[in-house]
Image (cartoon, rainbow, N blue to C red; front, side, top):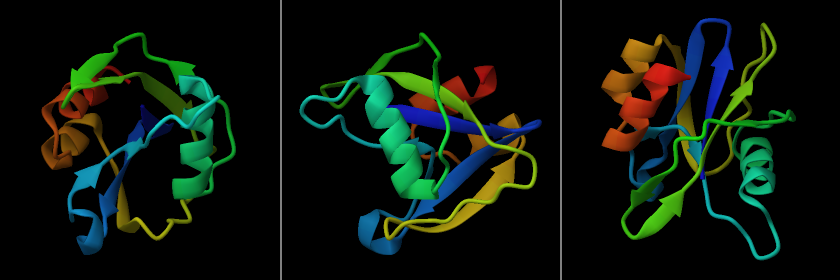
Length: 115
């Protein structure tokens, strides 16, 4: 699953550390046994950024590398900044167009335009 985080007119992009591929993406992760996609999205958001909030489905799933990916959006409060986990070494707040330029994979690049 993937989660796009909005704050006003901006979208959060996070940079995976060199040990994890060194590319820009949105919050993402796998669904653990017993979790729904939505529960996984909330957990990954908390683990990767420290943001404790609900998520809303985008209703725009896609398939990537043999996996089915559900997409969600979450809103961050004004002034909130992420606390990155070990997987990430940087983040940026971007316009949708800037985020689309940075994001590594084509599916998130397309989806960021509709969040």
